[in-house]
Image 1 (cartoon, helix red, strand yellow):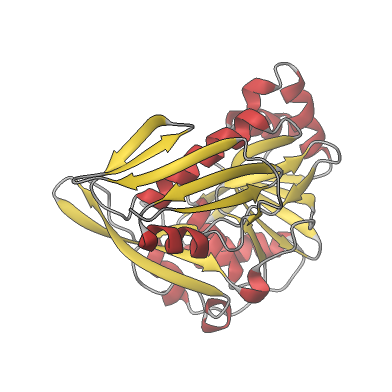
Image 2: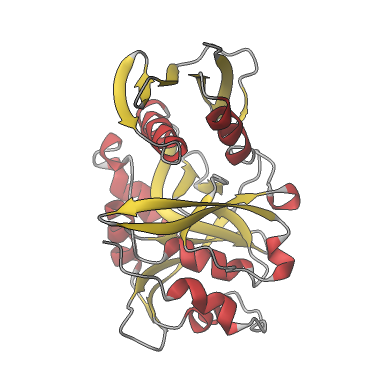
Length: 304
């Protein structure tokens, strides 16, 4: 059995990955190209292993069993969920929010919300309007200055159709696969940032806008509704991945974060209209984008 071992670093968290499956190893390197740095000689805080036996791929963290899968496609997501949990546990200098984020004109737009609220879809749509990709799920706030750091994980999206313009697509690489939900196989893909889409690790942005999206599949139109900073701070706390670490200080951190931001709730029906509403917040004129490309991901199937 031939083992491959490599050390990585996400933010300031070093970890090690060992596997006997070359295809998974190559996939992990490629999908993490925009997110991780080499270990740089630091001792890993956590060691992960992905080893294949006769039936399963077994995932272990520091020798402790975490999960097993009969197929290769869930491995990357499962390992990175373990890494993400360790980030929340070990890194105390950051607030992690369940949110998408993009940047334009040196300011960031946050899109906090639970799963299925439309964060990844909206993130992809806004790329067509000249925004830079920061994250579609994990927003990293540096507590020293409350600025947003990039966490450019692969964008995990439903369907195999093209969801960005040709101009944007050349900065991403797409990997297609299928997941089983009940008795059906559902198509999914990763959009992995490439070349000019990858931001330097020391890049950071001031938060200019906080928009809480809610996708309503029965509604045709989209509209923005201003929310108070008190409501925005409370909603941020609800979408904090590691908020329990801050106790009473969590409210203070979120209150400071929203103090200089414009805060809105976005009810989404039509994706193109939703993107143009956010584009209007930044004071820029709407950009003409083919609605078919944007709406294709919007009309997703209900997962079984």
